[in-house]
Length: 493
Image (cartoon, rainbow, N blue to C red; front, side, top):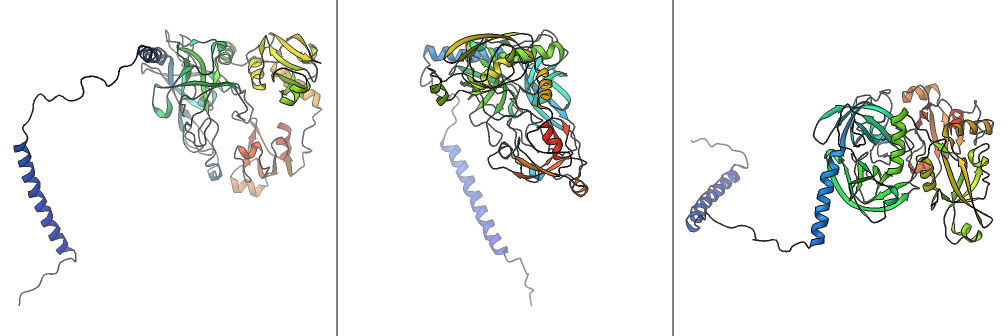
């Protein structure tokens, strides 16, 4: 009796399928032979139309050539910056709560441009852009690009790489100056900020998402843009007087240039308004007048010689303008005057409306702040005031900004907004609208830290909530100072 072979259950199907494949192969072979025989090969086949369907008119050609010329002129002035960081912390720290937190520059913790989590203890890398501002190697970039970098490498447009030295930083404007050892470099031409107009075409140049020497085009969407609640690293409020543009700006563009169609630098690309860290139509650049002032200060002595007036103010509202019989809603109203400040010495009073600085009309608080930040201590400033319906002018000499801090401390008699003493275990920090609690030894062990306070409550709608601070967040430092208790945080705030 012949033995019957046993095969897998799908063998019959496979055999049938194999037959189908064989048939298909024969069919294709026949088809191939047939097609070769039916269609003769042609050597001189003409592909593509003989001319473009339309022709640009002279104005379009001129604009196209302008973009080409400007691009070629400004590309060599923009560099790629690559940095390495060292982040050290306790390996037991749980940083999951920080996932999804994103700063205004579009660099999410745990990835993106900076490439590290807040508690990662391994070296990390990041990238950005910079603009050459001197033939001998000075470069302007963003502070957040090189902040805490252990190594800075610069690659120029001709693909040469240099190790850069940090010259100085200004977190308040998010600007920094670095230098490479080079000579006869192509450098950017600085525009006149007064010539920058809303609606004019601009080019953003940088190295977004690792794509070196990228140019995007847009227009100036707004000038003097503020109220973005942008804060520098460490929590300090920044100067907000930006040029807004719809030219595409993405992570890596930071520190690159915003140029007009003359090839003149009008600003340094700094921030994007984004919920996911990528471009959605709104980019912001530090205006060139502020860039020039900060760069000169940092190159001269590595720090900022910034002046101050000594007033607290708020923008004039429609109701204020009506009450003061003002024809236009312009200026800022003085709410307080610092004692012994330049403002007090010049006779400025609470209730005065500042409507112009050095003859330039003031339309917003951030504009006034930006103008003052372009001045150095010792410089004279002319303020145009409106008091009791009458205009007057006051000339004052700016004091150094650091003197302001000393005077503020001497005038407040160590009283803080929060009623918090050194023994307080839990307290509400009104300046931040959060409640914090001192960490006990067990909590410190659990979180792997030696100091800090834990957030127990966040007021709804507060700046803290908008910046993704949640109950359970550990605050280790404020203004670069270690926090050991609610009193410490309250004192700094």
